[in-house]
Length: 111
Length: 114
Picture 1 (cartoon, rainbow over the protein chains, first blue to last red):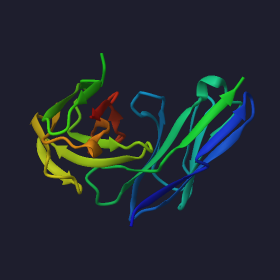
Picture 2 (picture 1 turned 45 degrees about the horizontal axis):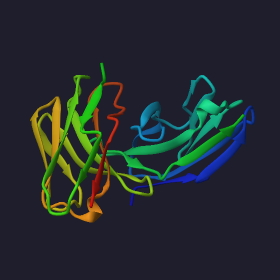
Picture 3 (picture 1 turned 45 degrees about the vertical axis):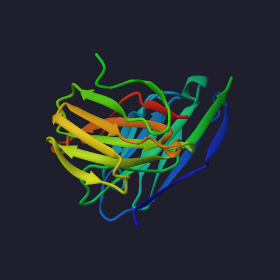
Picture 4 (picture 1 turned 180 degrees about the vertical axis):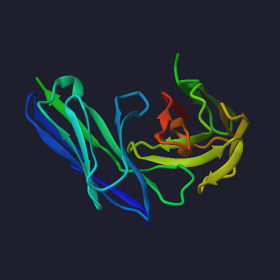
């Protein structure tokens, strides 16, 4: 069964304290792993797509990496505005485009 | 200039009523989806349409019926609403062929059944 597990469920950081979020997955033929950011009362906002092991992508203080079993979202020197829930999703091979989501990591960054 | 827009943003209704949620995308995508986010914030696929054709229909009660008049619109009609239908419903779209296949989401419709 295709599955996505994110850890930790919640993470509290001080401003400037770097850390990583984990996304472990089991999927039959990966057609892409996606990271989204969701703010309260809003829809998920697309951040990154990773397609193959070893791939990395960066955007401002965020960097996403991918292995054959997991993905990490590294946050370097976070700021309070990085506080949000970060969602990981996979697109299984043979799927019609639908995403399987993890339950998310709620990140709080205190000034 | 919203890419994926859905209306209404909030919907409060009584049990047994019928309601609809509308969704439109201006990205030129060929595939549209409905996702449900429950009280624990877990997002799960409900339906997927590709060029107006139903592709995915997960285990969803028959009371839920999607309709796609054209590939830019995907509406969700719900009959005989139940308390358990309370959730946030998200519309999304993506382009299935090409280099960029990420899905873009609307702002959500918070449905409360009382």
